[in-house]
Length: 268
Image 1 (tube, one colour):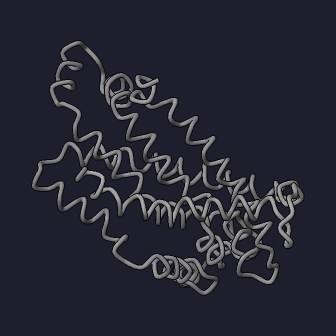
Image 2: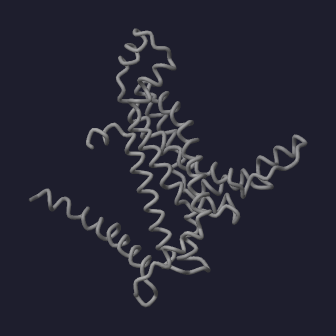
Image 3: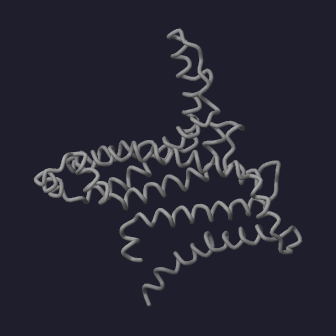
């Protein structure tokens, strides 16, 4: 009985901030201004297929880069002495202590046409390079902002891998590469799936990064949804329909990712 009382605030939170917004999204996506049922707005989402493809593609690139960078970093952290791990984790999380907008503004200063990089190139006698308002700048912003979300779950899983397994693999004649693919990667799959989910989901729905670093030529799903609710093209019904389709895409991708999680496969 006491457990029910303790869980009551959480249930109220879920209802108010999760269930009710989801119901409102579904309602607006399938109704007109006068409240009648319609599939028009869902069908209209198809005309923005190129934006969906661009968002998914850039998010996949950013997620892959984060995984490539984070995996060795997390492995090195997990093999460090305990007293050093805390310091290194603090360094990894240090950028997250700064406001998200300020971090993105900093990259605008670095990548701008008159920014730090182009200023250095001009001093060295080279011409300025267009770095801002490109897809590469958007991916860079995603990687910088979401990289800690890939490192932390990988580290938490790798840190629990028994060091004796590496010694056993070495005794059995496994090379470092063979140990990586036969021991480390299989045991770290839960961290990989969690990290990919934690990076891909916010990356595909971001709008601040794409607006500030990508300019108007790199419109993503998040920008499109924001335009329907806060922009000049005010249409909450279409915005809800786009949000609903995006939610379905994310759920499908997360379901596919869970197939690679050994814990999920055992439960199934």
